[in-house]
Image 1 (cartoon, one colour):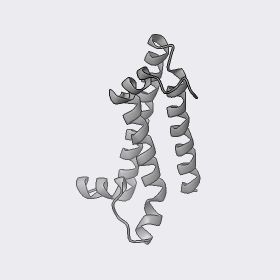
Image 2 (cartoon, helix red, strand yellow):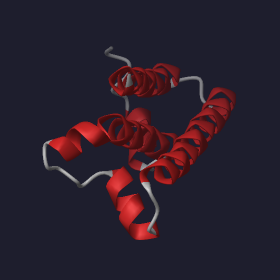
Image 3 (cartoon, helix red, strand yellow):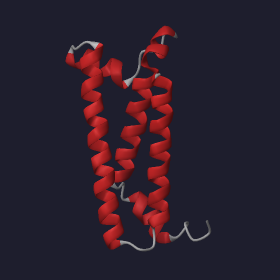
Length: 115
């Protein structure tokens, strides 16, 4: 772990790379889609699903389909950054691997909640 906290790592995160934003998108939208119905029952309505439904005037199912497209695009961004990252950087692969691992775990957890 000691080799992770290097200046290059902080510089990379500060630049707000596409993969970090995409990971946030995957986690946020996946969580909102998985917990949407439960949150409505509790009286919470501020979620990606509710915002999309109100903003675009669509029903729940079309909102889910469109938000799923956003998640899919975010995964493509993550993969694109990963390829570039592997080609041009040999010092930070573990940092990027952990970012992707956290995103995968969050997505798996969200899918478990959906069932």
